[in-house]
Image (cartoon, rainbow, N blue to C red; front, top):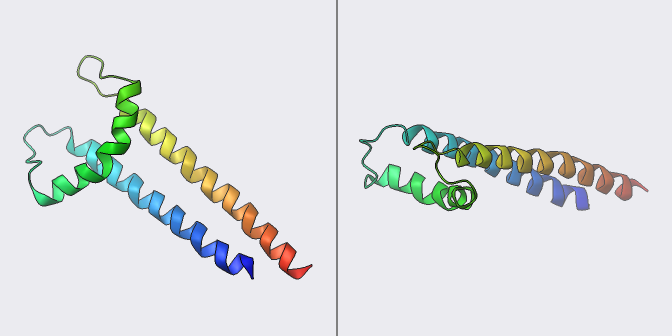
Length: 102
C-alpha cells in the first residue's frame, strides 16, 4: 500500500529534477549570448526559474576573469541530488514493497 503512494512521488521528484536540469543547461547556454533580450517572456521565465538556484553557487564561487564557474558546481550538485533521489527512492520503494508482503 505504501509503495503505491511513494513510487509516484519519487518518480515525480526525479522528473522535476530532470526538467530543471534541462532548464539550467538552457540558461547557461543562453548566457553565452550577450545580446539576448532578457525582457522577453520566455527568457525572463527561464531566468526567474534558474537564477535563485544559480545565485546560491555564485555567492560561493564569484566569477573569475568573466568566467562563471559556479554553474559547473550547480550542475554537479543537481546531478548529485538527482542521483540520491533515484537511489534512495528505489530503496524506499523496495522496502515498502517488502513490508507490504510480510
